[in-house]
Length: 319
Image 1 (cartoon, one colour):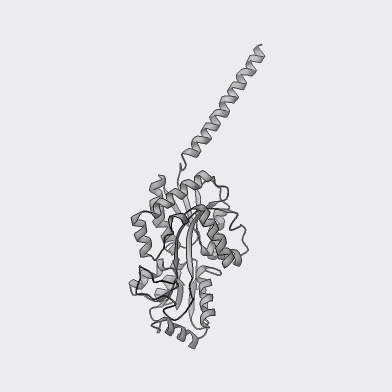
Image 2 (cartoon, one colour; image 1 turned 90 degrees about the vertical axis):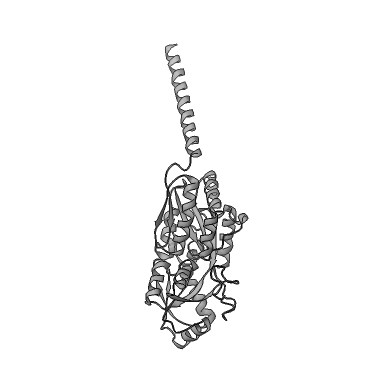
């Protein structure tokens, strides 16, 4: 009987241990996040993706009650940073800023060690924007038509900054060459921020860039901006014509930014992160700062994880 009683006690202790373990797991899930969250920006600091992430992170930090650490992991048109998150644990503590280039174009350019669709969980579409066609201040052309004429008169002499083979700026520049019949050299950078620095310094001749980094330099008189690649002018820069208005009909290129988690991240964590992003996109300060950078915030019904997944798949099929 003593042995049997001992077995009963052991069974009771094991039952208590299992219950406590389950309760701890549930409590842990309920208190997410319980430590700092890292958001990997796959480009150099100071670039458009980095700027957008920092603005958004300020609000998310307050909403989630934990520090947000932004880590710039640049290289190979953003595929290195995106790959780092693809291989991270799906616990909600390592996220990625993903853009048109990293989550669409790179799949066609690079032999990736990860799958752009299967290895990520979408959180939310954050913003989208057209690009701008810009040149160094010393460029003799004063409008887009004159720029195209100058490039045709000087084939292979001009240089254009890009974020590397397959990056959005590179693909847009290739499309520009095709549509205008021009030829120029490409200079790859680890991000648009260092490319813009060289454009301001006059080390490269032109760039097809994100408004977030181009508009401040244009307002300061450091570069020339000829057109935006959208069907309508930017509210933040109404004096800059669209490519259609400037004589390059149909040259419409849009870049977007989203937030992603590694595959396997629990749905309740995705939902909590999505809620934090949605709240940040409704903040008046965020709205104003994004508008100043030429960013368009998607309608509320397009800010869901499901909408971002559908949009990504449509963009992959298109490009």
